[in-house]
Structure formats: structure tokens, C-alpha cells
Length: 334
Image 1: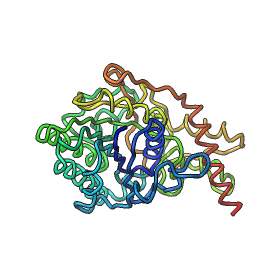
Image 2: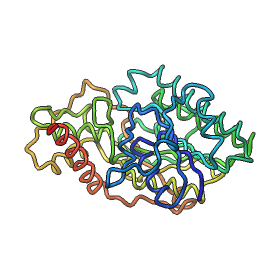
Image 3: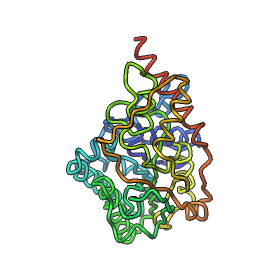
Image 4: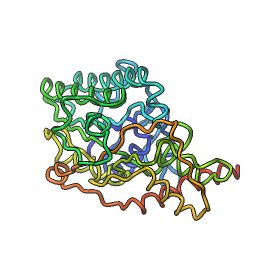
């Protein structure tokens, strides 16, 4: 049984990961300030939390120094998911603050690990993002899958991409200096449930919300719809983290995402199809759309971890649509 801390453990990825780790017999601790995450996301099918919230959950703001020492000093492994991220409007509208907070969050978690030392901490997994890849490799619709070695020279489009890249660089220094085994997994666009589907939400949950609420809420898609991403289901991401716990140490950066780039137009049309509604799709080209397109060459993940994506996009979208619809319907009934 491993003692594992998951930062951001009440979010979409975190809550699914915590459940998997508990299921596998581990002693799991969670830090989350509940900015986007929810304690209810840690509940099992019976509505009971999968960890003891009194002893294993900590509502801590990681942007404040030394706050996480007391938890980190008590565990064997740290899986650091926590960051400030949201939909494209939020990310580009709050770049300075987002950059500042993410750097603080990362450096405080890493410093706690540094102080705990290799005698205590057996491994640290950090989650990076495909947004850290150079803009020059993501500004064409002719998609060539990204490779890890293309990360430098660095030129991310957003402060979010920069902040996550700074975390990767700091982690590299930590690994050399303290000799705590480390691993960075660079996620492409993760979707699934449970998720934030409100005003700050990312593209898939936002479009699902609009489809569920239609015609009361118009089905507006930001941008031309031609922009694309490599969408990866949360269950596939959790698989990758669990495999990294076994095989990822000292292997540098590993991308987690599919080799297929799916346009936002295809996502919007799939959601309309799943909704079985006669929805008019309106593309709002006055809104930002971010990087034009990207996908992952996941050869390294396959070779090092034995990982590849399993959940088909249509199946994942159906599952998420049902979850969001259930949430919205239950709110209406209350």
C-alpha cells in the first residue's frame, strides 16, 4: 500500500484518479482549494466519499508558501495535478494572474518535496500540457503530430502554456538536485466527467451545456470551428498516470494524447447528433479560438509506459453528455 498525495484531487482528472488509486488499495490524500473541483466528485455510486474527508482531505491554497508541507511530509508519492486553468476566454483574459499563480503553486509543491527529501518521497509526477509546445507547431491546419523533442526552443502561445513549462523546467532541476524520481506527463485536451460545465468551462462541456439547454441557450461555437485538438478521455489519462507510477521515473517528458486531431466543428456536430435535437450551430468568429490545431505522436508513451488511448471519442462524448444532462436536469428539479 502506497501513501499517495493527489493535488487537485477533487477535479475531473483528480477525482477519477483518487477513485482508481483507492480501488487499487492505496492510502490516498487529497489537496484541493475547490476552485473548480467539488468534494462530491469524490463520492462513489452510493454517495459516500472514497476517502475519509476528516483525515485525508485538505482545503489548502497551494499558492501560499509552506501550506502543503504537513501533507507532503506524510506521504511516499506526490501526483501534482493542481493548477489554474479554465476555458479559452478565462485563460486569455487573465494571463498575468494565471502565470503568477501557477508558478507559485508549482514552486511551493516542489519545495515541500525538496524539504521532505528522497529519504521520504519515493516519486513525484507532474502534469504538464500540450499548450506548452511552440505556437509555430500549432498554427497550421495541416497537422503533423507533436514530438517531445520539439518542446524547445520554447514559444507557447499562452501564459498557461508558459507557466506549465516553467513547472517542467523546475522539476528537472529538483530531480537532479534532490534525486527524487520524477516524471512529467504532458496532457492534450482531456474531457470526461465529472466536470465544470459553467461559464469558465472548456470547449466540450460548454458545448454540451448549450445543447442540453437549447433552445433556451443558443448553440454558439467560438471561432470558425476549423481549429482542432487531440481530445483524450479522462479514463485514458488515469491509465497513463497509473502506468507512470510503475514505469515513468527518470524518463523525461511523455505526451499523453491521440495522434488524431479533431476539429471543433466535428465536436459540435457530434454533440448535436448525440442530443437528438434540431439545433442550429452558429460559429462566432469574433471569439478567440487559440492554437489552430495539434495532435500527439504518442510513440514515447507507448514505448515507455505501454500506453495508448482506448476510449473512442463518440463513446466518451455520449457518456459526458449524459452526465452533464443529469446534472442540469437535477438542478432544474430542485
